[in-house]
Length: 182
Image 1: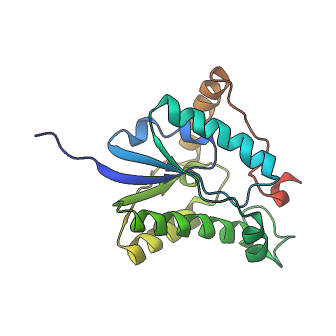
Image 2 (image 1 turned 90 degrees about the vertical axis):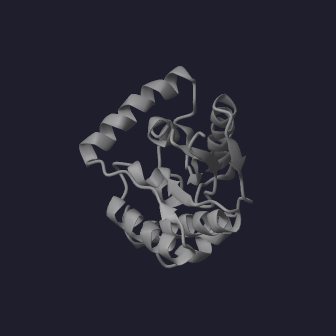
């Protein structure tokens, strides 16, 4: 009898980042979760979502898309508008998206969750993994992370940038929020 794959709810921010994970996630029953209320403006959110829909269609993956609510992000980050990149504002944003992912995973019977955020060479991976492991314990889930150093993460991302170009996917120039756009 074939081994059952673990169910993984996988939060993604964009298609290019997701391409980095394809080989790393082949042992999971994968469902994509596109929850990014931080992305601004809404047409930026839609451009990224369009490619996410395309990649889900290409790989026959289910996609969950909660309602876009930029005001939620703004309310939570009020007072942190001037924070530097990877500062407290980013931590609030990561926690918002990761907690929603963990809640959805638990509610819909997933055993695992993860995020494209944990592979980015531009993000505070230590914080992302710490908060995700805490959420996993709180929701009785498993958090999937990848123990790659910064150089390995850059190599993986560069490799997938080429694949993204081949597929004619949109490549953003900033993290997503109105603060990082500046």
